[in-house]
Image (cartoon, helix red, strand yellow):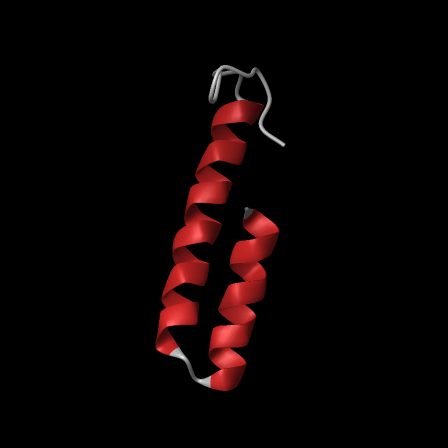
Length: 51
């Protein structure tokens, strides 16, 4: 999710499409939040680690 968010963010910036940029930021933030929750030991979606 982090990689897809970063790709969409870059594509949105390069092409000037605001929707891609917005979706990229949202996916990037959600992916980072899930990664941090998994790293500190909280179960995310029934799993101990999120990757």
